[in-house]
Image (cartoon, rainbow, N blue to C red):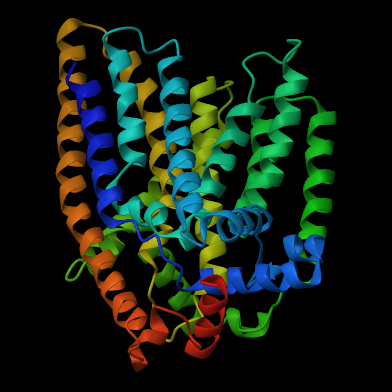
Length: 423
């Protein structure tokens, strides 16, 4: 009972931190989203509005949520908080049911499945649910996870397999329409189909659909602000990219003051473990179990997301600064490694003494996650309070230079948009 109770306590702490740190006021990119909606409302060009790019992304589902929020809820941000939280909870449920349903986890080892949701529902991820503009990441995540789980059916020839895999194509499409990072679902699908011994027709279908979708998605996206190809492969830039990758993989430790180096070392260990597991899986002669295949799919999704972040964000600032909001997209790496390791450990815990040791180790991990939950929650709440204090000063009529980093880069645009919303 210890692990299920720890999982439930983790959820309670997550919910408490979310309620305490939620920011139900528009700021940042939300100003741009509202401005685009107001223009579409005046012009009536709704299709163009839905497909309008935002930086390097097509945010069709975000555009729809913005229309709901502004049209019905006066730009409160509540639909984004609800959608992001529901996405994260659904992802946790998918992981929990997948592990509990594996044959290696008969009672009492089935309680180990609670470690998956605990890894995902950490308070460092609260910022992606509490702030409307970060909702893109949990929403993309749930569609990526659903894509991996839906396509990998237990049996190739059941009558439900075509339906499940058609739904996987749909969720892969929706992942990219939440955020560009969702495009990683397509190469992961291809790997999962190949490793799961799917028929060649499935491989060809995934490749053609993925290429066609990628070509359509890239139309109209801006490319300015990134290093040219000839500049990317010089040593200083490669070193900066490597530094960014390790800092990304070391989140949230690499963001904590005084823990940048330990965070990067943790990121290096995580990278080495993921590459080792993937390479061993690729050359393994035996067909792996379903849980192992799901874990490899999630690891590949996490590695692909990290690669996209490095390629697209490393040159935005002079120094390496990885936002904490990316921590949600690291969850597939952590959970994937857990899904690969747990069956291996469970199958080797044969005697009662070995099973007791395994459960004791899992309880120790759960205790660590709960301690981290409290520490991370305090940090997230402090950051939320700082943003709210700036928004309070802005709403009171003060205009300070530092507000452009929180409210919006152009305060005159923010004034105009928020004035229109308040009418």
